[in-house]
Image (cartoon, rainbow, N blue to C red; front, side, top):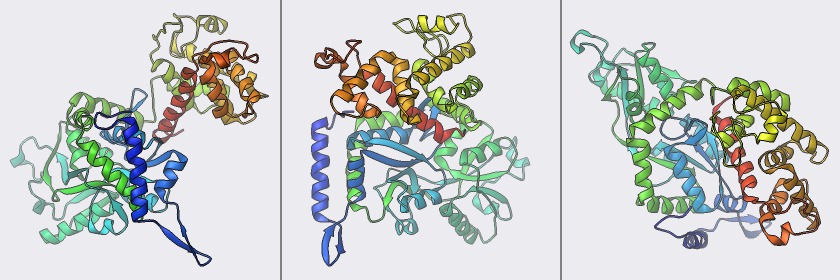
Length: 473
């Protein structure tokens, strides 16, 4: 993706030059058998593997699924950063800051992009980027009908003495609350919620299940849009900076991230994203409706059918759902220019074969789609022994027709590539739009706009990764 402030070529050149410059200035050296040898940095590994593993919060601002599509403020920023690096983004969801830091320190992820509160103690453990924003902690409580008549309503932190207050499992926040006790000269009964997110705790306050929660002001403000009964007027901390983080020793990666963030936050794209997710109430309502839906373990109103018919093909139901979203965005009335219709976008001749038409129910279309996938699985079963690789061949066949995928496989074999490996076959499927390949003697089905099925497979598996992160099987 290109930016106004940096062309694609210039971006790659700046990235290469920055890596070279930083490496020259701070090269990691290790003594092996008495000799100095350079050590690969995390940035080297990211560039070589072409993959960035980033940790992110699941909440109604930063990352959520809306009608099957991943969205979110930090999610979109991370995608821009991955595009800048020219690598694939792989997300890991973790809402607990302590766990996030531990996963960073053990090398499970390359980057934490969950807006960690910056503190001196945390700075001993991780390398913070330049601040990406600021926030503070606030008390969330129910609004009283008449403040003067409600003794449980807190108007200032001093009144928290002796009260029971719920907080997320966050060491930084726990320390802050102990400091508050010192400041007010009284104890506060802290209830640490080990298995609840901030938004879940806020919802419990709104429902009258618990009296008080301390939460991040950003999250609390969004919650007031759909929980009119809650009050967030009492701060319990000063404003503090928040930032992304990398491993403490990864100075090269930190330098690249900081340089990019500086450029990005001064761009029109950053301003548009902030308006979209932090200001636009419509998007915030969308996010919350989605959060509530996914927390119930649901992706769509057709989940029961996906679960039922995924068993027919021995697939994870979330993968079948990801395919259906790719085809129709879960719209049972969807129609394509080529004549495909329904939630599974079956072509008329295929739909007829499996007994459905435009008047059939979405559930019947999902069943028909699963039966078609089962037939495709049978065609590939003896040819592609690896079941995970086979799914990719099946999906491509579902999209473009099995004959074109057979052609691409024959081309791969002819040019000494692995015909059982999807990446090798995908290369020739994409090139079936090139006369050099579609006129080849081993090609029986002619021209094919192969980018479409290759992207189809890639996008389904990307969406499937999101679904697996957020919805338990």
